[in-house]
Amino acid sequence: MSKTLFDKVWDAHRVHSIENGPQILYIDKHLIHEVTSPQAFRELELREIPLFRPQQVVATADHNTPTKDQHLPVKDELSRKQLTQLSENCEKNGIRLYELGHKYNGIVHVMAPELGITQPGMSIVCGDSHTSTHGAFGSIAFGIGTSQVAQVFASQCLLLTKPKSMRITVNGKLRKGVLPKDVILYIISKIGTNAGTGYFCEYAGEVFENMSMEGRMTVCNMSIEMGARGGMIAPDQTTFAYVKGRKFAPKGEDWESKLAYWKSLPSDDQAEFDKEYAFDAEDIEPMITFGTNPGMGIKVSENIPSRDDASFEKSLKYMDFKKGESLIHKPVNYVFIGSCTNSRIEDFRVAAEFVKGRQKAEHVTAWLVPGSKQVEQQIEAEGLKAIFTEAGFELRQPGCSACLAMNEDKIPAGEYCVSTSNRNFEGRQGQGSRTLLASPLLAAATAIEGKIVDLTKFLN
Image 1: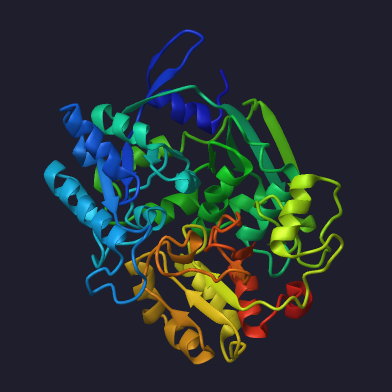
Image 2: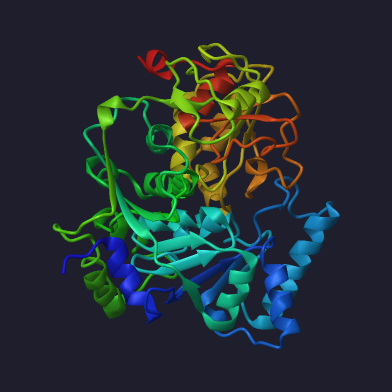
C-alpha cells in the first residue's frame, strides 16, 4: 500500500494502537529549555518517577536569556531562577545541557539541526510550538505541553491521535527578492490560520526541492501558524549533505545504513493525502503582514484588503491601519532580524549583501540576534559583523530575544517593528507593540530606508 512520508515515519514509531482511539508514539529526541521544563521535572519528583531515557534528552537555554553581556550574572530574577533550575535538573538527571555561554548554546530549533541532533525519519518533540522546524529534515516534529513533557520524561512515549495528512505543492521559479519566508507567509495568507488544524503538512514541488536546508526550516517552522500539527519536507541530497559530518551525525557504516533508510522515506508516487493545495511560484512576491495573526499578510505591493468582520477591524485598530491602505513608505522605528524562523547564517548573509555599503536610517533601532553561538561565530568569521556595524546595526548575542520579548529586548508600545519572527499577535514583542512579519531581506531594506519599501521595484 502506498504511503506518505508522514505515514512512513509515524508507523515506524508507533508502539501500540487502540482501535478507533489514540496511538502510542515512541519519541527519538526530546528537546527542552528553561521555560517549560521546570514544572515537568517537579511533577516527576512529586510522583517519584525516574527519567526513563536521559540520553535522548537535549537541553539548551534560549527563551528568556539576555542577548547582551551573557558572561555576567543574569539580572532578571525570573530568568536567573529558571536558568538555575534548568542546570540543576539537567545535572541531577544526567541530561546534556548547552547552557548560556557554551559554544553550542543557542535557540533550540537552531542549535539542534546544526549539531546533527536533528536527522531524517526521527520523531522529535519539545515544549515549544515551533518544534515543527525540524520537519524540514523529513522528521515528525511537533510542540507539546508541560504535562506531555513529563509524559516523555517518564516513558519516552506519547499518547496521541494520529493527525490527517495534507500536501502543499509549489512549482515554478521564485522571483528575484522572494525568500522562503515570503513563500510560507503567502501560503498562510491564502489558506488561512485554521486550514492545517488536525493535519500534518508535507511541502512538495520544485520550490521546496530547490530550497536550502535553512529555507526549508523557515517554512516548516511556520506550519504551526496555519494551524498544522507540524510540517515536513522529504529528505533528499540537500538534506544528506547538510547532516553529513555534523557533531552528532551518524559516522562510517552507521551513516551508510541510515542513508539507505532515509532514501526510502519520500512519499510514494501513488500516496493519497486527505487535503491538497497547489500554488504557482510566479504568483509569490515579497510579503508583509498588516494585522495580528500571520494569516493577515499581503504582497508588499498590495493594499490592505477590505473586510466587514469585527475581529478584522479590531486588528486594524490595534495596528492603526485602515482598509485599502498601502504600507509602502510607512515609517518604522524598529527592525528585528532573528528568532527560530530566521536567525541562521543564510539569513544574515542575505541581509548583509543588501546592507553592504549602505547606512541604516538614523531613527531606526535595528537588532540582529543570531540563533546560536555557532552562527554568531560565522557572522564574525565571514566579515558580516563588520558590514552590519559599519551600517549602524546592533549585533547581539544568541537567544529568542524580541521574538517573544521574555527578556529585555522589547518593542515599545505603539511602535512598529518589521520582524523576521513568526508571530504578530497583540503584544507579542512587548505590551502595545505592533509587529509586521517579513523576510530578512525586507527587514534589512526597512532598516536602511527607515520605512517599508516595495522590494521588487527597489531591487530592480
